[in-house]
Length: 267
Ligand code: GLN
Image 1 (spheres, rainbow, N blue to C red):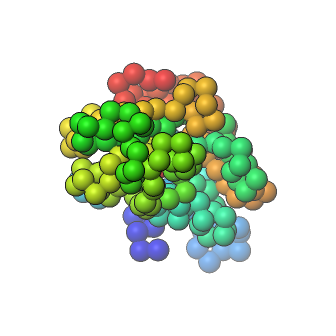
Image 2 (cartoon, rainbow, N blue to C red; image 1 turned 60 degrees about the vertical axis):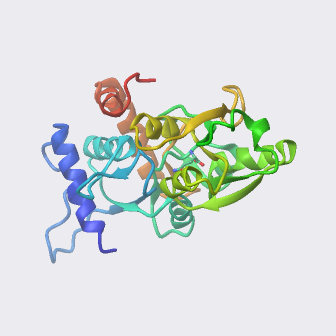
């Protein structure tokens, strides 16, 4: 993939910026042409536009909580990777088909997904919401007879699907969050369904004129945390390294520092 190499250096730069590059290079690749085993470069798939977790900044560099956590964990554990911003649904499929080794994409830990993925320890709490642009949409009741926007393969889509008969709306699918928001702002759809931390962040930037009108109950099956995932039964060592690194960066303050860069109140 054309951009892969660049993301390795982006990750390295992010790790450098955090002052986390480990000395010693215990897992450095074997010398060229040597018969020694070459260090594995994991392919880690992610979403394209899911701020504050992963998004391209103005010069096209991928940044965000997931991007920086992964860089810090890789530096802590001494593994190499290439970040592949494929889009959410595509990222999950890439892992399932073995094209990518893991996925970090604000991916909710859902029991149904445990049948096909192995998850890390949870690293960020989340829930789902509905947001509208038109002031006449104040609650789910106002969606009767309307079409709402959902993002393919997401938990917020599942929440919308679970509500649509009760509230009498229909759904239309989008692949990316930014295009979905614009569809609501343009007035084509009455509301969109999204993860609350992501919707709140988008609204807080001032560039997305939407208002949250409903949120899943905090004790519902839709209020589940994010985890890093690998294909079930594969890349157990990568998953173990992620968990070990996550524990270390939580203990040494790096986790709080990264999250605090993007959101004001941690946790
Ligand atoms: N947290 C949601 C899910 O796992 C959405 C993730 C995303 O859109 N990147 O389904």
